[in-house]
Length: 339
Image 1 (cartoon, helix red, strand yellow):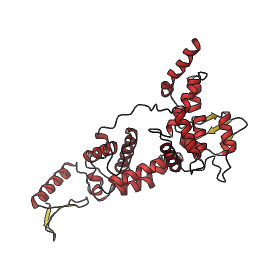
Image 2 (cartoon, rainbow, N blue to C red):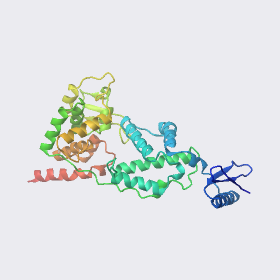
Image 3 (cartoon, rainbow, N blue to C red):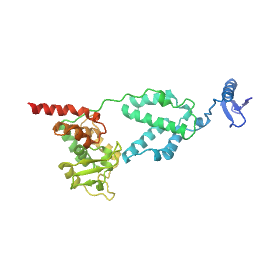
Image 4 (cartoon, rainbow, N blue to C red):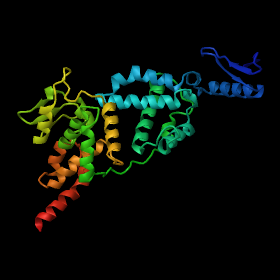
């Protein structure tokens, strides 16, 4: 029989004891609520279906994120340096928005609200892309899954992320700059306080390398005589050799050698903010650093002398379907040759 007792605060505490099981207790504002809860718990224990949510009620999501970062991520995530930085940012965003909530209180409604606020933006935070929200929700699901499977914490409602609608994948970006916009952007990159912004943009457009690949590139991976950069840690997990154009070689030869061995010894966020500032000063809208990679591949396609397979070898795309949007540029070039 459960024990129902008043507290000094005026609330009522229900205590359920069973031999061979830890004590379960919960406090309610009304005695009838305490009695109802105790009857429910006793019934579930008798039927062998009771799972305690006490740990989920005591632990906050912020505390679980800290455990996840320390115990799970180092052993299960194969991340490049730029991915680690992005992943840490996602953890911090989840911690700021939901970290104070207990694991038991994070339900579908709360996660859906987080999704909608990220997509629409708030007074103090701008809206983000559907892709960004999907990544954050995926990480939240991983953290909650870790809580259940490895930390042994029962979530009373299961994993709520699996039960809500995810933002649809957006269309691939097609933003390209006009010749005048590109000239203005280069001028602003030259005057940037970051000495590595201009060479980063120049190398990105000449090699189609991703930002993380550029910032992780070391001089030991660059063979100027053979005109290649050997990438061993790429987004798709496969090594590749990036051919270097004459313009890319000129940029590399002009760079000073860092004592740390990095070709571009700059942090991802430093380049991000410097590039964003240059874009704004140039009076350009809706253009990101990743769009430079799209610009590079578009230029290769427009030349008409690179097959899709050759473009994939340069860009590191794992499937040719990712390059379909560039085939129309090759068709236009071939049509011009036909006359």
